[in-house]
Image 1 (tube, rainbow, N blue to C red):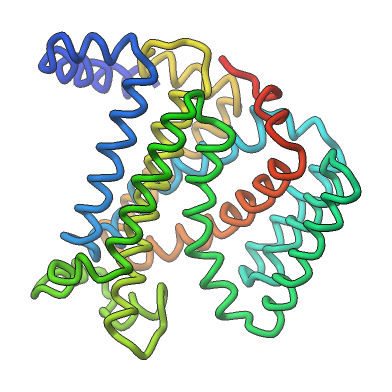
Image 2 (image 1 turned 90 degrees about the vertical axis):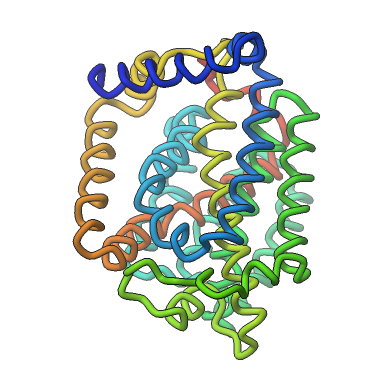
Length: 336
């Protein structure tokens, strides 16, 4: 890991020196650093979604997908100590395995009902949550395709909400990311960015082997082409913000040290949390997907999506526990 960390630390040091006094302030001030990263991240995600949506759709999961899955497991399962709660492991984490066999919502939502039963909460809250779950699960059976698409898009929103509610140390930064994310969503879905989205070349599929109709089918199979592309662009934007949240904002806020630590130190902390074997496996998987993607880009992306099919339902399940158990879960995070 040292061979990977050294050039990254060197590049970051050069970038921070280029910013002068502001760069030194960013090193020390976590709140300013997180707010700056949140603002730049959302603006970049929006620019990417309206300028190169097809490229982001194809390459984003291959470049950032596996690291963000590791962050999911680290901050939603390992750090809160959920592996020590046997009922949670049995009724929430084990059912996630079945999502790899059948990624439909009627299977993926089972960990959510498990989360309701194992959550340390009042009977009234659990009953209310169970009522919402029954309505969602009925929809998953009656409208399986539509429900699965809703969950596909909603899990990106849940990640932003989890950061604002559970991980953000500063309420201001939590509100900031929610505001910026909501503003970006409204711009894309209201038609404010249509002039860019529908310009010639915006949806060039970047030699993925997938046509524009394939992309629309995977993200928004609607007869109205205008709305299909708007929703597809919304997904690209929300997915990019999703990556910003898991790979930059949560790691910065989920540790006691206010300053920036080296990449080498970050790798050591990650290995301590999830174990060196899992870390090396994730690194090998990420590199393997990139190599495969250089040959068959669309196949590599679909392979990643099949591997990652569990993580959206994991986020829904943990969000359910957060809502039922309250912010007390935040105090149980093992901050390092």
